Amino acid sequence: MEKYTPTWPVIGHATVVAALRRHVMKGSIGHAYLLHGPRQIGKTTVAEQFAAALLCSVQERAIACDECQSCRQRAAGVHPDFHILLPTVNSETTFGRPIITLEQVRQLQAALSHRPVLARRQVAIIVGGDSLQDKAANALLKTLEEPSGNTVLVLTCDALEQLPLTVRSRCRQLRLSTVATAAIFDALRAGGSSPSVARQIAALSAGRPGRALQFLHSSDQREAYVAGLKDFGRLASGTLSERLAAANALQQRLSAADDASLAEGLRQQLELWQTAARDRLLNAAGCPHLCQWTVEDTAGSSPAQWRFFLDTLRDVRAALGLNASPRLALEVLLLSLPR
Image 1 (tube, rainbow, N blue to C red):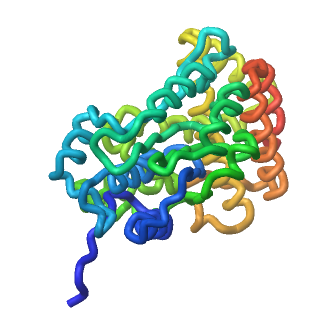
Image 2 (image 1 turned 135 degrees about the horizontal axis):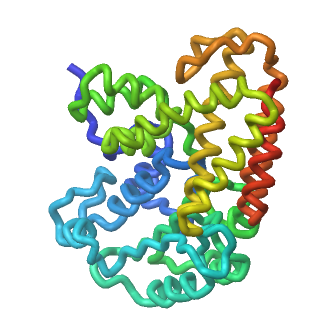
């Protein structure tokens, strides 16, 4: 019988997990790591498990024992050597775009300037490194250029190109890719989900474990996502005037929320459209078996047309990140739908 080898409680990403565990076990730990990949793919989960292994008093297997004082304090959220920096919504930003400010970085640097209290080193996770303001990124460079021997920084980011090259080049970069649908299905089944629920959620997750867990814990969000996929189908088959009306209705619905909710609502809407358009691209290309969700016949539209729409969607998402008008961005996007 094959001997069971314990590992981190992470769905997928076996290669990245194995690499980070080797660094811990061999003691070849870098001063800064950058985990990048799509949203909800598990970057923060991997970063937290890496931090747990680094802080644990027992490091022979590079897995947190969950029993030592260091592990107990980390689990309780009171570990003096563990720091997490999260983006915040600043009133000066347009449409509620989350940012990491210079003041946040300075506060982190002040905390890291002290010697470790309980563990062998201090560990800091910077979630959403691509949200660093220019001044904040420049300030962080000082820590990256003059690393302390007992400090490890772990950055995560969704859009690698939005993180300054000066920051990227000073980190060990590890890319996290989408996880196989079968692996997500197996994880959901192991957690007690029924086969039918696990199968639907795994298909809807688009290879993102975080989204799968979100849908698992909220059937309302899952049903809303399915409804959104169906709405996109009706939108794709609608007339030009119907599409413009849909853009106006969506803008009004999202604008009823505050800035942070508006930004989040737009992001979720565009991610849903990306998933729906990808399936239509695959279906139009004669590969319906690769679709994550059943789509109606795309007769009359070519793979090139859906590729153009996906490229436009990417550009629109980037423009919204630079505070472009949501109404104008949505109209441009809907006009690029195949007709």
